[in-house]
Amino acid sequence: MISIYKEKLQEATINYQKLTKKYNLISFLRLVVTVLAIVLIYFCFQDFNIKSVFGVAFLVVLFLFLVVWHKKISFFRKLEKSKIEINAKEIRFLEKNEYFSDNGAEFQEESHSYAYDLDVFGEKSLFHHINRAKTFLGKKHLASCFLNPEMENIAENQQSISELSEKIDWRQNFSALTSQVSDSADFYEKIEMWTQKKEISFPKWMQFFAYISPLLLISCTILGFISDAFPFHNWAKLLFLVNLVIFGYVFGVIQRNKISFEGAYKILYSYRKSIAFVENSDFKSDKLNKIQQKLYQKEQKSSVLIKKLSNLLDDLDNLSNVLVSIPLNCFTFYHFHVYIQLIRWKNQYSSYIKDWLDVVGEMEALGSFANFKYNNPKYVFPEINSDYQIYFEEVGHPLISEKQRVTNSISFIENSFVILTGSNMSGKSTFLRTLGVNMLLTSMGLPVCAKRAVVHPMKILVSMRLSDSLNDGKSYFFAEIRRIQGIIQSLENQICFVLLDELLRGTNSEDKQLGTIKIIEKIIRLNAIGVVATHDVEVCQLTKKYPQTLQNKCFEVQIENDSLHFDYKIRDGVCRNKNATFLMKKLEIID
Image (cartoon, rainbow, N blue to C red; front, side, top):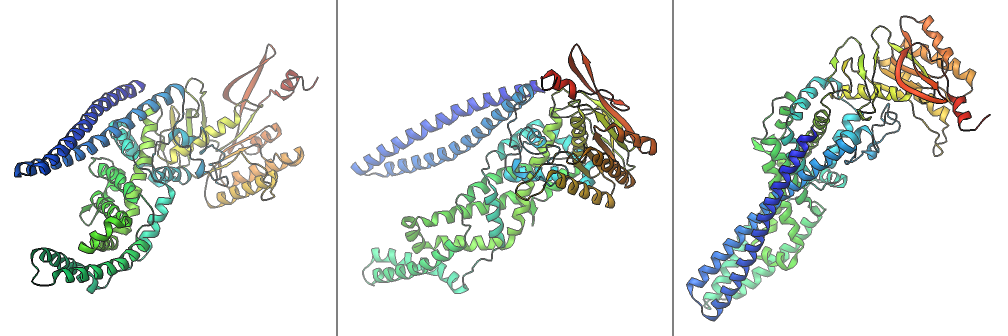
């Protein structure tokens, strides 16, 4: 697929160069038209004639046309530039493993049942690897998929991910559009506050006055210039003062009640482009069509309604320019009418804004998943079952490069729980994370890093990475037993997939061994499926007591020519070799 990205990069580069030439040409034409208009206006003042007036009018119209065309070319140029960056970054990611997207560290939850232990968020994490979202909502929705996967929608997710993975042009065009959105968490908070806040409406007589008074003012002003037979000038001055007083009141109301942050219309206008792109797309999968249907309200496209809102907010943002807004509103009450339209829009459609913007976030998350599938064509979708059968053939960790990745096969069908032993650095913890990550990918509807997988999706519970906390006064041991307590409580409600790494490290060896045995017996009574990794080979004797449930697996290390050799391959049985003493002698820590 690297060759495809290189083709797309070349295509985007050529398009960008062509658009740049057009962009520069239009800039030059605007300059020429401006100079011609200035010259023609000069000659009009020197020798006024109707031809010069029409000439100036034509040049003004031509200039406005060039401005609109220039703006359009500028937008397409930005899209092509974004696509150049998208393809260049994907190439570096695949060739050099250079991560470039947001790592999602802000969504980290150390108390989560698996996110912290499985490196879901943070630098070089699973989120960092998969994320291609550009908007804050896209990243937030993607994080939600990792933290709370909708296991009941796996089939739908697989279908939609498969469809989007084949549409590389669609994904890149959509990503280029969303990259134009400069949003933040603060923007959505204020949008939410605005939609829930009740606006102050004006009485009917004031709305009627806002139509009649400007007409009377304009009429009196014109008649005052035409005739002196009636004191139209005085009436015009009086109406202007009355309108000015009313505008002062209206100005205060609008300033207090409009969206109180700058640039909202720009963000919404950028979103409109992304929403319109989704509206006009042709999808086959049920999930994508359901998402698309959220964009239609009262037989109107949400992109049109968002554009209307954006334009209204843009107009209201100009209100603060008093040099323009005072004469404009005294003669037309323009911003008053705009505010009335905004209230009407809000009353009709404000409850839908969140859903419309969420669509972009959902599509960005699915686009990220589709990109993950596209970048990993050897990964497979698991075969889903409801019989608590879990089996992985040649499963590996997706964050380890294919050249360095060592795969293993494991089944939980005959024996549902594994006691895993192995010396230090032999690969136990990596294998646990491999299982946890691929179970998580399954839950989200993503392909897994395996040759074949049979999975019953279930809640994942992990106890691998804990630490002392000076802030809340909790020791490592207390944190661990609290985590185990939570695992037990979850298992009492449902069958879960459990991964435990070296239980009870914070206590003495005898207490640790007995406690580990009791915990294993407890969780297998609760029908847990999973793995416990331990250095204590005495714990492995439990397989004799529970032969129908427990199985022993191990990772071995070979000491050859005064060096350690790891093959990271899982084996049946109990680990026999140890390397701690050898390493300490090697480093001259002990004799």
